[in-house]
Length: 299
Image 1 (spheres, one colour):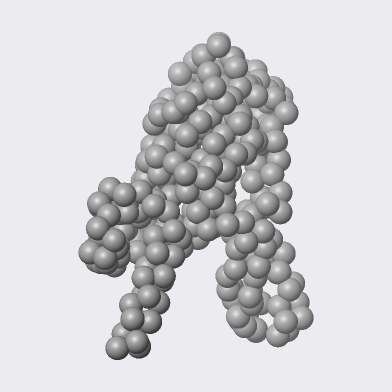
Image 2: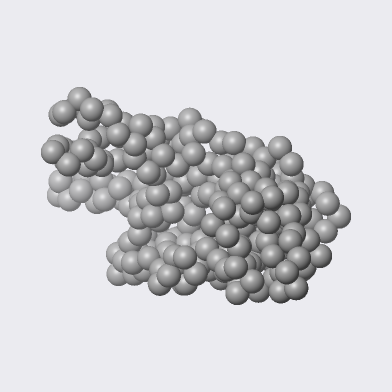
């Protein structure tokens, strides 16, 4: 099975402080399509399951396993999805968006290469980082003491899984919960609760979020597009997760009919067919359909 190799922009830091960055991924197969079939939304837990199945190696960790995949930084998981998309469908992406200008709204075709998406690596691999709040943003504890020194880690897949359900209900509470998970200490205080994090001033939260953003690796998921209808430019956010899994989404009925079609004519087992990438499976279906049509025409 063909493998695609890449370099995580952040990297998984193990207990010995070693950062594992080189990754090997394989194309998604019918098994992953079966996992995704019939789902209207894709949760962070489902992303973890797909990444675990298709990531063969992260650095010296092979196979990485679910907990390692859950421990990957958000940008590293996005990068893995990009490599999976490249391995499964190729690096070229085509799509259609609507012009963002209210008085236009025309359809705009977009085309780009996954390899051209800007990736920003993190300079420090952590996993723990420190910062000082400004004097105005200092946190006051229950005894009235002010604290400025703060340590934190960056959000990972486990945080996405935990906070995701709350995000759909209350974005503000979800962000507070995320900070409570990622802030390791403020002054001498450790294991702060969400209630204590909620006491941070807006300025303190802004400084913390800005520092996290500057520290974290990033995958640039927006692009500037020109509208051929009105001639103006606008920025399009590229929702990688929805786009990629939208390309893969199929019904159980169609998937199983394809498996049956190949099994019936080639006498392959279900396991053999379901382990094929979609493109290979459908290439065989196309070849078989052409051959059947040729034989029918010859009668």
